[in-house]
Length: 386
Image (cartoon, rainbow, N blue to C red; front, side, top):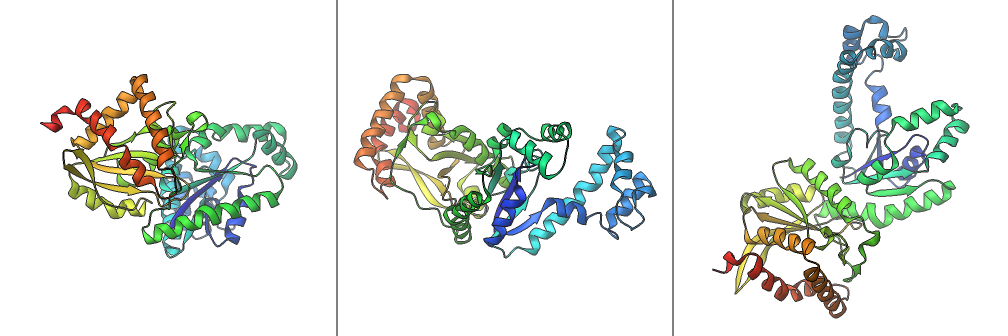
């Protein structure tokens, strides 16, 4: 199952995108609907709320009297904390049930207005942001929902900023124009990324890579993208493993292939093998690999890569204290601090990209860099050659 988080500021038209995704076969789990389900007449949570906040929070029809609950629960921090302690587990458990009920679905979209505010994005393979400028959202709230300007402005101000959403969401869907344009953009996203991602995930297959192409870093936000991926890996694996952004995309101003290189450190390669199925579930299938140390020496590692066709990632799973792990960090430190080495490596990459730039030439390109790495290994990790 490909798990997708869907969000957007109030007035952005998230429900429109949700309907389009439904038309393309996605299952939608709506957070607002679940929040209403758990306080419907007869639900156990109602009795727990009444026991804590008084019987007046239950309306005459047996459902929740939201105004009475708000009056009782928001009088002080202790009461608000008590409300959250009751509501959040009920919503969490009901959400988990909905996901379980659709466990055989190819694509499940969790529609959550406060996805960013509640720091939920690491839990999903892909996060979609329905994006509309704040001023247009304000106009929509006033025109379509009849809000006065001050109320609409206050609601927008209480939510995450655009910058906060951009930092943690993988895909931005422009919904500022006519709905037909949004429908076309979402259709392309489904065909080009979502469905291939879901298929690769089900088959534990890495996405195809295009030709070797070096990208000017001026418009790239590689460090932010790397942090998003690392957050997802930590969420899926726990916090016990160190995960670093390495390679050229971690060097400010460095030309690079549009591939995020990450290094995950484990106590031993048995642990790496144990993690392999979980990494595949998270979208990073892999296989046994090795680092070339020179002089006919190699060092075992696992190499995992992206199932998502929209974000190329190389994930090197190395043993803590290994030569490969030490070299990756020292090489990154060298490139960040030494302008001459940085420029020399950039020129080497341009030359090799010209020689090995065709489709399917990524491995040849990587192998052609090995003599350069061997020279630097002798300098940066000399003990490995004793």
